[in-house]
Amino acid sequence: MTQKEVIRRTDAPAPSLPFSAGIKANGFIFTSGQTGTDPRTGQLAGPDVTSQTRQTIANIRAILEAGGSSLDRLVKTTVFLADLRLFDAMNAVYRELIPEPRPGRSTVEARLARPEILVEIEGIALAD
Image (cartoon, rainbow, N blue to C red; front, side, top):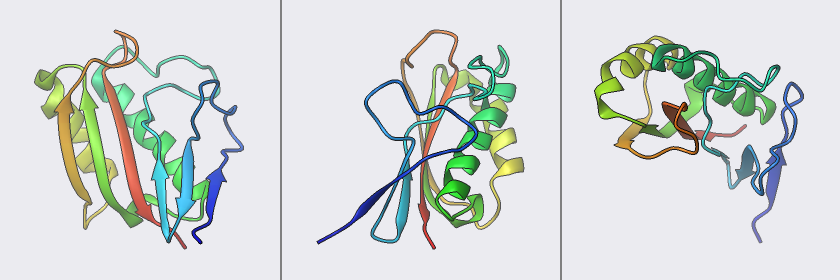
């Protein structure tokens, strides 16, 4: 029987919606889709995709670290962009912050939860 463990961040409140920020199971950590919301303020890190992508990746890093993993253990990410014309700006930040060898990645255009959210990223990483 497979065990699954909820990952809880100590620097952010638990999600108010019915999901977990991260789940550890079968040697992997699965993050929920993260946005550019600063967990300390509850506000978006900025109005542009660059600042939102930086915060989004910081949020993923915090979840992975709380579960005993890290960005360099990512094996797959999915990036959701509100507008594919934002791809180059998002990709520049992603390239800067996600270490090599970089994980497999899919990028899709999607309508996100609120119109001011420009990027959402979910990840799968190797656990300890």
